[in-house]
Image (cartoon, rainbow, N blue to C red; front, side, top):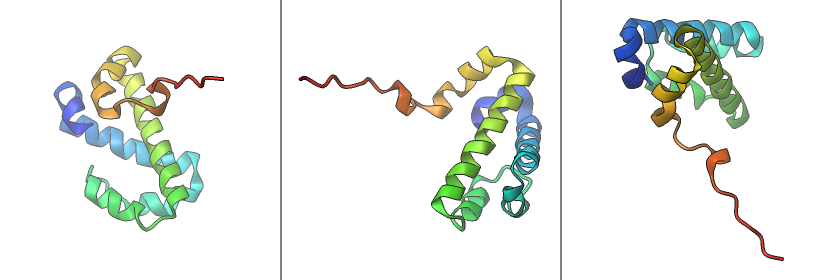
Length: 106
């Protein structure tokens, strides 16, 4: 995400969105306060991964989903939904809902 967004909002802008996302994650989901406190304020993906592997699979998945959703929402309010979608298209990759459904023959 940093590589896709830094040319538009700068490295400091990406880090600011990341930090704000952490803050809002805790505000919206108080159960993540300890997790957010363990995550460095810099956008260090390896450090974030180290914190998440200490969580249960369900908690790590929920935290990641909430964090990315908040980050996406913040970015959308900053640069708009269309530009956000275009910039992050390659980052998200095809989602499960984008896979073609298989027809089941009777």
